[in-house]
Image 1 (cartoon, rainbow, N blue to C red):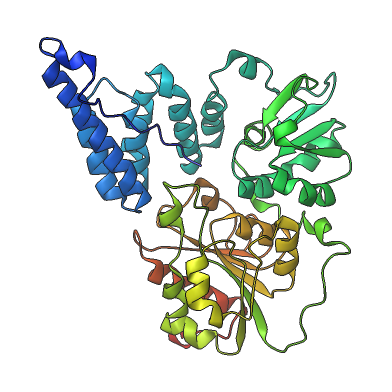
Image 2 (cartoon, one colour):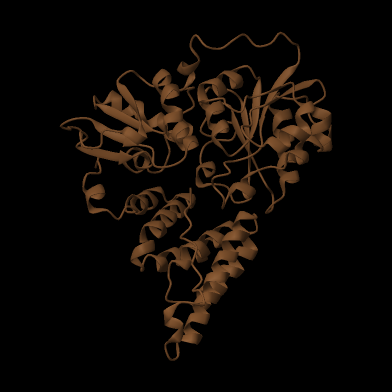
Amino acid sequence: MFELSYRMSLMGPETSQRHHPGAQAIIGELDDAASANNAGLDALCDADPIRARQHFRRAFCHNPSQLGLLVNYGLALHQCGRIEAAERSYQLAMGQEDCRGAALKNLGFLKVWQRQGAQGWALHRQRFQSPSLMERQWQGEACLQGPLLIWNDVGQGDALQFSRYLPLLAEQGLEIQFAVQPELVSLFQRSLPAAIQVVDRNTAPWEQAPQHLPLMGLMGLLDPELTWGATFTLPYLRGCLKGRVEPKPSTSKLRLGLCWASNRDDKALFRSKSLPLADLLNHPEWQQGLDGVELVSLQRGEPDDHQRWGHRFSAQLPSTAGWLETADWIERCDWVLSVDTAVAHLAGALGKPVIVLLPWMPDWRWRYGKPGQCWYRHCWTAAQPSSGDWIGALRLARQLAGAAGLLPADPAAK
């Protein structure tokens, strides 16, 4: 959910400025900055924040007037655990108009990560630069002339997680329209109270809504320290299953649903959030624990993994499955093991036990909630003990699964 600033373009050899007296050295510095910045972005995509930090630092040294580079640098610093330095980078980046929104967004999330929710959400709220967008944002008024349009400004997993706040608004008598990605419309229409009108974000009635609010803005107004949301554990999306789910296959074996890869569209974080499937299937402690367990793939995409390891699964979610069908498949599992992606949030919101595998520096949301009830009724988290150490995260997850009775107790934990 953190935002990168941008890639920089190299100034090609035919650029007219190259012929100006004294321009050669300046353009050379700009090209060096662009190359270093782009190398840093590539390093983040490779889940190597240390190398990314080095490249972004070099880019800024070549072009210190380009404060937008500090947005990228701040994200790399955060992933390296250098929180105070990341905060300073974002604060400096706010001084450049074209990257001020990204800097405010990242600084806001960083403050929430530091458990300074009120300050963090206040910064996050300022990320939009359009005056018309800002002036129509809902401020929490009880009386509105017309519907309040809540629109999902983030990923589909975020919509699944933070839709828990919408019934609070409906209970206040507010007329709510919830605009989400088209893939989510049918699931929310079946799950949320009838008083909440779910609409396609791409065709949302913006003109008819006198006031609006991005979904992520709800926390700042209703629950800035997340004391309610992170401990609300009712299975609030189970309504989508009504009249749909086929009986669980008749077997005495446990059925474990697996989701090992994050969203490939999030190029900067995909590698750092995704587990190599071989690490799980070849992990000695998990191999022993999975004896007699049916594995079900809840992973969409990743055809190479399915081709290599498909023989290990008793069933695979169809590649064309939407969220309603995914919910059906989750319901027919006994529990779910997932990386930090939408499947984990859907499983939790359905009330299904789930263990979430996290990178060493996890997203801000996972720093809230209770052990075993982290945002959801039966939810545990297992983070990497050091950067890139999925083996260590899997070892912790195996211990949690044994302690919770999801798998036979791990003999190595005794």
